[in-house]
Length: 410
Image (tube, rainbow, N blue to C red):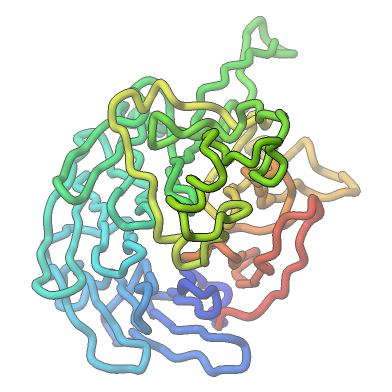
C-alpha cells in the first residue's frame, strides 16, 4: 500500500526544505527531492503522530504510544536515540505545537487540558488552561515565543453531533497570565500571530446574513466566517485604516534657514548629532523581523478587533505567511453533491487564499488542495491534495495562482 494514500499530519522545518510526515503510524524525515527519505519512528506496535520539526535543530518531536501510554518523543534526524518526555502524563495528545525558539512545546489533550512542556533541560510539564466543554484547538506561538494563543470551547457540542463554539484566548508564558481575546459569544478558531508580532489574526463565524428558503416558509443563513485581526498594542493602527497621503516632511537641505526638523540651527544640530541621518527606516533582516514582537496590551483586546475587508464564506485553517495570512476557502456544496451531478466543470475544490496586509490585496494561491503547512519563517508552504505533498514558491503575491511542484510523500 503506497504511503501517499495514508498520509497523515505533516509539518515543515523553518527553511521549508524538510518535511516531517506521518503515514500509518510511522514518522519520516523527508528532505529535498535530491535526498533520500529517512524513517524516524517505525517501531512495530508503536504509533507515532503529529510530527513537528523543532526550529534550530535537526530533530522532530511527535506524540507516540511507546510503552502503552501517550508521550512526546524527541527524535534526532540523524537516527540517534529518541528522548521520551511526559510518558503517561498527557492522556491522549490531540494537537502539538513548538515555539519558534525550540525550547517549549504546547500540547492539547483529549481531557481538555492545555499543557506546556520544556523541551530543553528538565522536562517540566505544566498546565496552562483547562476546558470543561471540549478540547482546545489551534495552538499558535508568537514569533518571539513569549505568547501562546488557542481556541477554547465555551459552548459544548450538542448530543446530535452539532458543533459547539469556541473563543480565542491568549497566555503570556513568562507569568502564566491568561486573558480572553474574544468574548464567549461567537465561534472563533485558527488564531495566528503575524510574523512581525504586531497582530493576532483568527477566523470567526459572526456574520449572520439570512436568506429565504425556496421550499419551506423558513430562513437560513449564508456561510458567515470571516478573518479578523486584533492589534496586540493599543497604539498599533489597523492595517485596514485609511493611510495618510500628506506631503513628505522636508529634509534639512530644503529648509530655507538651514535648520533641522526640530527648528534648531544647523550648527547646533551638527554638534549634537554626529551620526549620519538615515533617509528612512533600515530594512530588518529576516531573523530580526521574525523574532521581533511589539508586546501586548491585555486590556481592551476585544475592542480592537477589526474584520478583514473580504466577503464571508466557508473558511478554515488560517496561518501567517510573509507579509500577510493564508487560509482555506472550502467549497460551497451540499452534503450529497446532487447539485453538481452531470456538471461539466466538475465539483468545486478547496482553494488556498492569501491576503497581503501591506497591499491590502486578496489572491488565490492554489486552486485545488486538501491541506497545507507553512514553514516557520512564513516564506513558503506545502500543500497536500489527494494524499500528495507539494511546495509553493515563497514569492510575493501577484494576484495570480502560484505554480506548484508536486512530489510524492512516500
